[in-house]
Length: 117
Length: 111
Image (cartoon, each protein chain N blue to C red):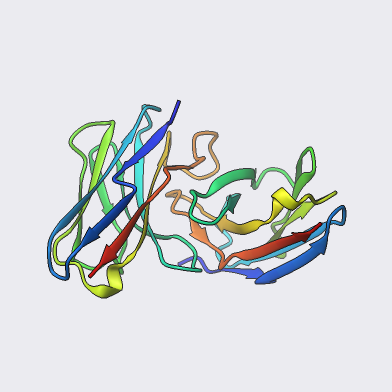
């Protein structure tokens, strides 16, 4: 009955080698988010999709890209991973993107832990 | 942008005692305040949330209070149990539902 699924759970890549992380959801939610969480820190929003509308955070590096081919799936592409990109990457979904509405609750996936060698 | 501060960073309580975690936010337009519990290596899990049209919400041993005038909100856990041990994050958002997280509180409940 998993609602937000992330694959793989653990990913090892080499410095500079592109990597793609996957997120899928069975909730039919309109909004999908990608967060980066480094050890002992809070999750930090990278970007989100509202339906097909992509919204990038101002301080998200260009090295991070995202694709959402349909409602259920969203991908995080890291074009040239650096050592500083090693982190847990969390996907989340919400029905709406307007805070204060009953659809604003964000549900997180289990995360993908990325290691960069 | 929004800035959320969270205190304390670590908290140890005896089993059965209460735990209180406090957060402040800077953007008066914020209107949604969730609390997440995150166990080591696991996803953040929503434990309670409050919207700006109410001042307090309770769910069994967990309660959240919100003071919009002072721009602060708090999490209260009563009758703490060892399984409550985790990192707790507060968050705030307004408008576009971009969650801004506090820095987290590591709660340890001592049996």
